[in-house]
Image (cartoon, rainbow, N blue to C red; front, top):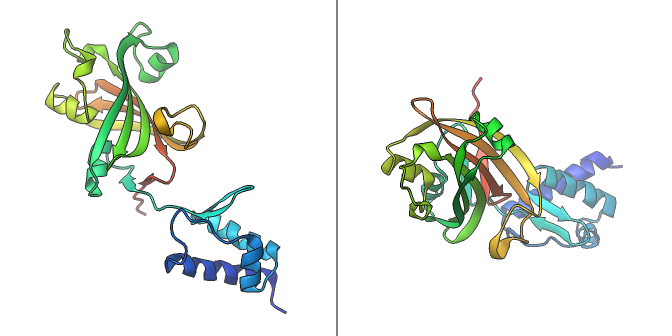
Length: 238
């Protein structure tokens, strides 16, 4: 008699082979548990356990009441150890980055924002809200705050377009060289805006403070990357 654990592993390995061979394309739905059970000549609980293994590996995603889908490979990958702009990370993959600004205005920092930024409570900030795209496909939604003190006195927020890092370097002569980041998984239906606002509710949040070489805080960003479209790697050495 074949042990159940061995049987689950065999089915899981066979399914991984089928995915690697392209039998099921990214984004497509796998056959039902019943159909897979018939194909592999095993029970539905065995299929369910094998699919859980694939889901743990990030190869498939089960949507209850809908089915199990092959996970799309991330469009963009970036290393968390590098302080690159998002634009540069997208361009490094051979895709064309772009930004769509949903808001650009001055306002007082909220108490929790001032505390996070380590600035006085009456600090005025430039509030920026951007949709970040690669070849026209939405990658992330970003909420950014820039201290007004680093900007020219007569600065018009409408002047800021495209990459914020590029603006800091070319317009202000500021080169961010240090970042302090927290990474969180977020499930929310209130992060996005625009025509895809209801299409995504799983995000990787990069909550990050950016500093110039002289120690000044120049940017506080909360960027919500759409799960599956933009992924992060970490280089670890022993």
